[in-house]
Length: 349
Image (cartoon, rainbow, N blue to C red; front, side):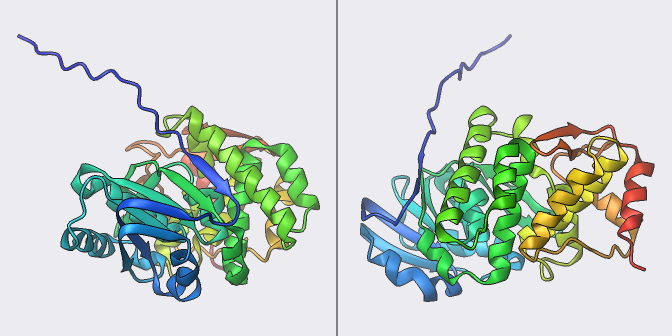
């Protein structure tokens, strides 16, 4: 005996990404802005001058990757329940990647899903985290291991927020821009080699190209079944570094920068990439004062942590390795000895 539930359907989750000064926006429903004290102190007044709603609330959670956890999610959800939000209510993520990921995740699970909007305030979140619908939180086992794919209704990228960005945060965003170029766009990488991203007009062009590159990938592979996994270049190594340092030593983009250098070393060892191109990537990262070194205390432990990566399985680790600038390979066929050999090059002296 069998009963079939036919759920075949086409859902259009398309949305616009606006790269311009924030327009006036009015909502005919309850809205909550989720932010942190630092962003609120710098920019909340500007945002409140642009937004009006039937009812408008501010939810503040602590700043930092170490607070991207269940407690912060509960803080958001409890506020929504206390203010009787319903399925027509809207959340606004106003901050960097941590705020965007947690707000999106809270939106995905509140009453089984409500809408949210991304207004990213860091370079990293503008070029990467706010686009594509990946949401989630960290736990004791690793980064972003709990979450959901939940696309925003729209993304507003206002370059004015970057004027108050600390240099390290700026560099962290550059790392994600470089990642985008290395994986899918050689011409963009060559543009970055020539460009000075400290120039606001050049930076805005780089943001546009990075966002367009990611948008093209997400449109082809929303749920990361294949192509989109390439955008995790540098992240397989970087997430282990963040886990080992309890998210307190490196910004996410800084860990990704080191992770890209590690991935390049493995790619060179496996004869995917030549030394010259690996050097060019490292040079571009160092141009923006990004770290490219990390002292691994225990190589075997570092290797075992790879298995907590979402792309890996019980038996194999999936690596994203450049074949050349603008082209990568996704493979789970790298033998342990080759990986350990590369990790030993980063071992503490």
